[in-house]
Amino acid sequence: MPTYTLKDIKNGNTWDVICSWNELQIMLDSLPDVIQVLSAPRVVSGVGSVLSKTDDGWKETLGKIKKGAGKNNTIKI
Figure 1 (cartoon, rainbow, N blue to C red):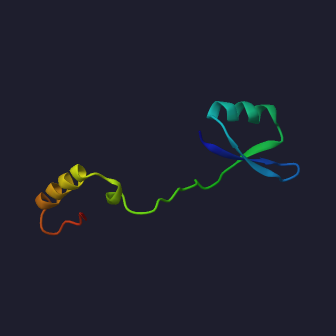
Figure 2 (cartoon, rainbow, N blue to C red):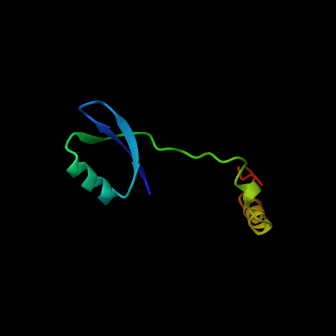
Figure 3 (cartoon, rainbow, N blue to C red):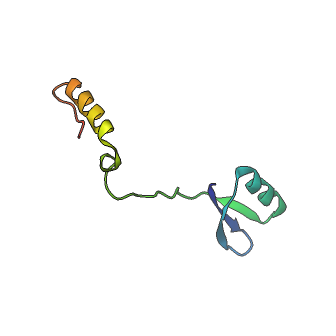
């Protein structure tokens, strides 16, 4: 479920809630002094590349694609 940031406009407190969009709308309708605050999405960064987590079948397929892609391709295996 998504995380939404809410703010009480009377006292300035902000907090996060995890709920569906419909639940958020019900919450905002029942709390007239609370607004939704626009915030940046939270990005989860992994360690390592995608290729290090794939099996040999995918790497073999990617090798065939690279071979047929032409001289100046940027495909990394």
